[in-house]
Amino acid sequence: MAHHRLQAPLTEEDINQLYAGDTVTLDGIIFGIRDANLIRLFDKKVELPSDLIPQLEGAIGLHTAPGVRKLEDGTYEKVSIGTTTSYRMDRFTRGLMQDYGMKVIIGKGGLLEEGSQALVDLKGCYFTILGGSAALETTQVEEIEDIWWEDLMPEAIWKFRVKDFGPLIVSIDSHGNNKYQDIKKEAKENLNKMLENL
Figure 1 (cartoon, rainbow, N blue to C red):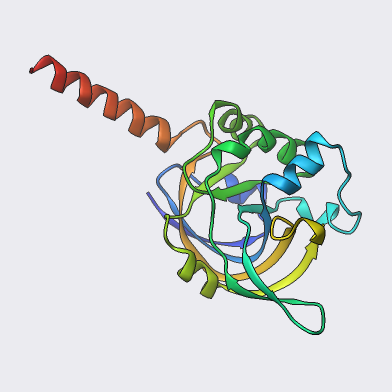
Figure 2: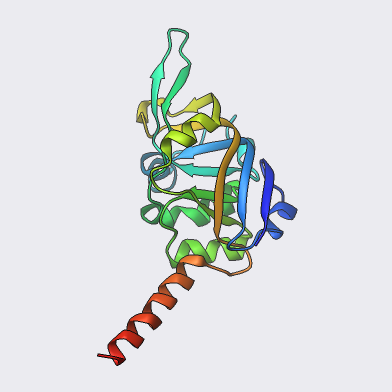
């Protein structure tokens, strides 16, 4: 296991060096995504704003619907930027990677089989952030730089500039390693041993 400090957006070389169990600290840009904006994009077939699309190549998506405060000049300041559970957004993973070039998803709880396989097929990773760490995350967001689909508040698409974001755990890598599957397998084996001893 190794620790990596990476600058977002990421390159293929960045992704290739990451293995499940490694940790990562991020600087740069990450994009806040969540159910409502992903449903609009993929289910309702509403195209992304043209200025956003080129920014998603190599990008990192954070599963979040942040608490923010709108200022008089129309910009937003952070209040609380936490992370939500990812599995219900699993079905959008392949599309984000294949159609828009996104490389990493940050969330909690892992992805299902479909999303995990997309990471292998399209060379991406899933980073886990520990639950209950919203206060720390918020301090690591330097600025909210932009917002799209503001009518979906708070599930708009957010552009965050971050510094020292993490540490994050590489839970699913591009090589087919999956910490969530490993833990489930180990738990099942331990349960079977316990039952045998009853």
